[in-house]
Length: 88
Image (cartoon, rainbow, N blue to C red; front, top):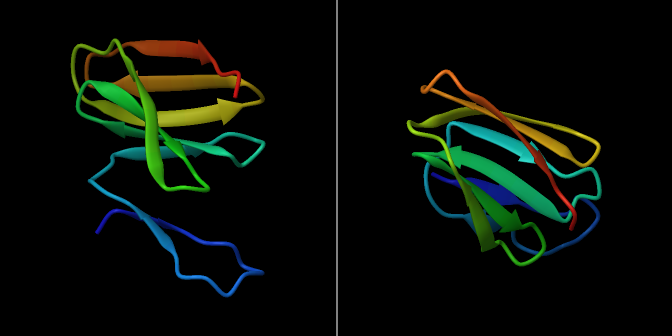
């Protein structure tokens, strides 16, 4: 359960991101991951597999995420699409 991240060219164990998610997006630089859950978006440090913050703002569960360059789009059960500029 949860998300697992690993480098294909490394011989280390996968790192697990705890929890359950309804969506996932990866920043183009590969250093940050964004997951949808409940009424906010969790921000994850891919390298350490630790939560790096969150983006609150949806009134209901976040159900979809998409990255395009530094723009993150999130949508939820509240019928709202939010656009976030991500600067790692």
